[in-house]
Length: 183
Image (tube, rainbow, N blue to C red; front, side, top):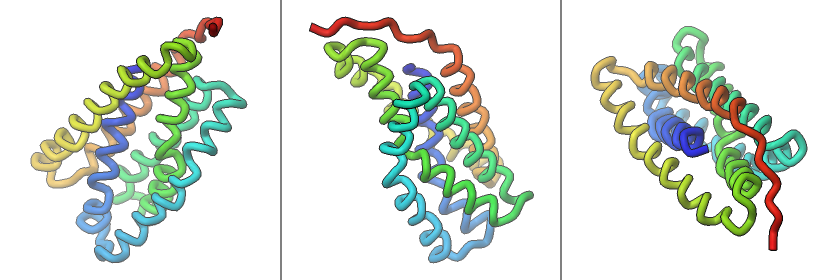
């Protein structure tokens, strides 16, 4: 779970930090237009945690995380390939990203409770948050270094897509949680 959460911290922070710059520098959006498009992330994100938390209640944490990471993968691929696909790819990327933005923490909190039981869930989630925080530090810094070399953030989005695909594979391989009796 820690590596899966690290990947979320790394990739979501990278995208959130650099997508507006990408819209302006690589796609020729005005700063106003890029900012307006970015504001839609907030609109979609308002419902992401509740929506995908509910979905994961119905289909299971593993399947919920696979779905969410699949949408993140699509968002990052569309941002990385947008120069080839056109501006519509950035719009769709923003919709996918915003739609799942707060889903991973919601599902992860529920998964930790299922894996560790309610008594140990808070300490388990705090430990996982260290992985998430490490990702938030590593992601933007690494993307900045890569952009220095390539003059674009496109490779970083493609790496993010690859990493979220790895998160899907790791999630699929998670063992089912054992039942915990609560006192």
